[in-house]
Image 1: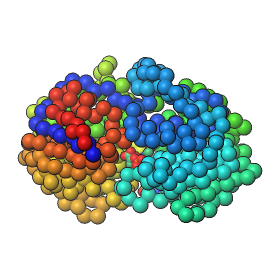
Image 2: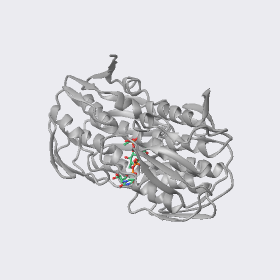
Image 3: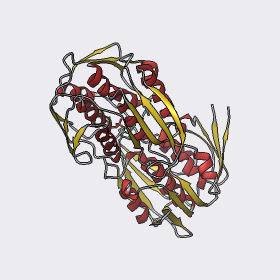
Image 4: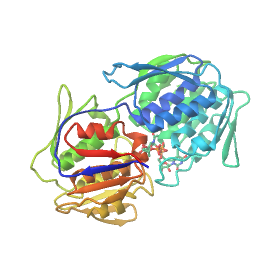
Length: 429
Ligand SMILES: CC(=O)N[C@H]1[C@@H](OP(=O)(O)OP(=O)(O)OC[C@H]2O[C@@H](n3ccc(=O)[nH]c3=O)[C@H](O)[C@@H]2O)O[C@H](CO)[C@@H](O)[C@@H]1O
Ligand SMILES: C=C(OP(=O)(O)O)C(=O)O
């Protein structure tokens, strides 16, 4: 297994291009199942999760071709890929693939909408909580699907096709909102999704579906109206920039000190997190080239943060923020409200000398003068990158094991950081 070795203590200076968002690219790719025409996606990040989803979609009959790198609508230079599901050849999404990535379960929506049946394994993904699928199942039932569970698989069928309905989620779920919204585009009549997720990735998916001919109103608010249509067609869509990658590098610069411009980003996608950084004493300005993150000399102030659905502070940046404030001047508090087991980085940060006290869903972090490098273990995607941030500021050498977690969601991490002066390298197994 590959490892990452970091020698800490270098300030970051320069610029970092931000990739297309993993969490937007995945549902957009899945939307290709809804049409027999070609869906062209620009600015697709080159990530392990994207590669895995290509395999999963391929199994259903989706062909994909690479258009090569070209500058997309957004000015980003990610990959442009064509997806074409002329015919769905298999409506089963098997355990060995779906168990490796949570988002692959979302194929259930488009498959039932187009083929009136699907057999999808219960999902896997980052081990950050129990992550049930009850909202998805109730949502699909709300559109008239019959749901059965058999040997770890969900069997969903709607022989006469899906029918629009009212779906109210008990609490906000990004994945269930994506799935029901996709399914409803081809259902007969109107669907109303209440208590819908408002994440930017939902808006990006809705924008693409609308270009494909779907009738959707209200994406980005908590109530989404979808009027079903008979069929959807192809289109070209550019994946929005990754707000979690943006926030991660902003926190890395805040931690090491320095001056870095994050290119191709949208500040409005992570305003809450940027406000927290400003409270901590980081200077942030929007320039013609992107978002300039600057901290030189000044100390870090402690912060009090509670994770929440968008537009709140994202759970996907919680671990990175914790790494940053391990060296703040005073005591910070982080409360995690989305996932019940998303503090696995705490024990690893403690190995580097962080002072963190856990009480249920609340972590109290007392700033220390310095961290010291040590071998640590990546436990999930965002936890792994929090160890990278801690390693960048720790004295001496930090080696991170199990970096396959990082490869799921961070494109060219070592290259992007070394270009700004970090001493970071991958040790191939
Ligand atoms: C690929 C992707 O986009 N992943 C993101 C997505 O995950 P994902 O879509 O899996 O997360 P959800 O928004 O669904 O989860 C939010 C909460 O709802 C609960 N829940 C969800 C569905 C359900 O049927 N029943 C249920 O109880 C979950 O266990 C969790 O406690 O949103 C999360 C919250 O912003 C992010 O951390 C993930 O990075
Ligand atoms: C938790 C994440 O991904 P997934 O939902 O695929 O596990 C993430 O992107 O941080």
